[in-house]
Length: 259
Length: 270
Image 1: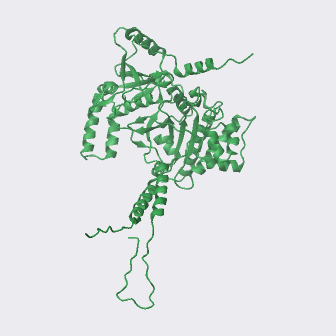
Image 2: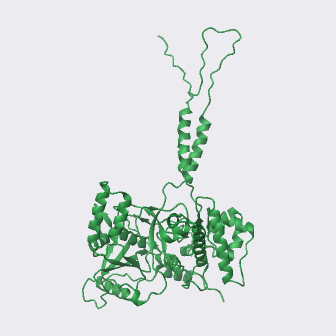
Image 3: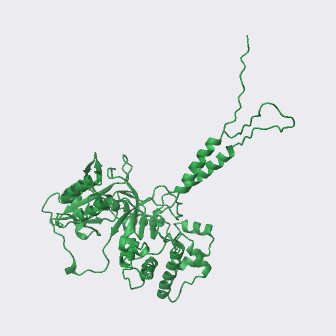
């Protein structure tokens, strides 16, 4: 291919130049190209990161009258926690993923413990065989009316009856339809929760089309509930904050300054 | 018996076809590539099902460093929670990344010097030019001059050292937007002010519809909440990230996005 063959036309003419086959060796060219490809492959980002949008309330104080009160029957509170092994999050040996626990209760906090098993423990399991499990199932059941309509819309979009834009618009409208019973979720990340735990919780809100949720810090009531849960189930949930203990041990390990 | 003659073949392989293929591949990579932005530290973001892409333009990225994972430090948490900011401007030249950075720097310095009259930070034009060409920075105002005087290699090394107490934009629990701001809040206020100003400048003489279509930082920030993207490691404690959220809330930038990797809905979360 690279050589250009030139055939002599029959008889050799006297004095005609001897024609050589021109052969270009492309090996160095290939070498160089390979190097460049390697360079570009290493320096590029093929997958762009995704973003999860979030709107938080302002820090400014809101007057009591202006606060919208959620109906007790609609409220779900999720207290998040991440299991730690020393100062690194504990990893499930089977899946290789961090273990996050969710302690949740419905309605107002029952600090008198009138109902047994008031606070329940769940985990982020996601879907197993396309069926929601764990906390996802609980939230989905709470948001049944919205989810039914959402599935309809999804079906219509898949059948190409509506476009993606229309679907997004309708899904958004559906999620905030005040005529349907929708849960109000309060996400309370405990002191040992990792960022991943929070993202998982926010993700569940997206998956289950829950439009009303807020992120708050756990209150004293939550601690009381967790303490009670510990007693009933014989578990330790309330641990000293991991970051504080590492700081303390590091300080203790450091030699005391000489007088 | 006749000898079987083995014909000697030339071992030359024709590389032309190979060359063609490599050139094609090279062209593909060159055209599709977007270069990795230089970041002082690597974080592994958690994954979510959200399919919204990180915008290419008009975005302010806030990077929160993670605890040291190399295991070489006695206390890996020293490296945790250091803040870095990067500004990316419009694709067109008037509001390019360089210009946006310049505007942000001027605004932030004005705010900072107003609050710290006793030890103001004054930068030379050369230092400002350095800042305009930097992608990500993370030093307190008091260290800014020092850092900008370094050479590029020195600076990368300096900013990449997470154990250095001089690295990372200071953040503390100030909750008063009008009071004495911490360094991170000064930057946020600068972002807010600059975005407002660009919007006012550009929006003059535009119809309502054109105004809505303005694809500048302001729109990204205020309307869509894509203007600020927080990037943190999945193992960073929530309390550390909460500090950033809290500061954003204080500075009235309560609509923002969190950077995540993609996963499918069916993927087990546990």
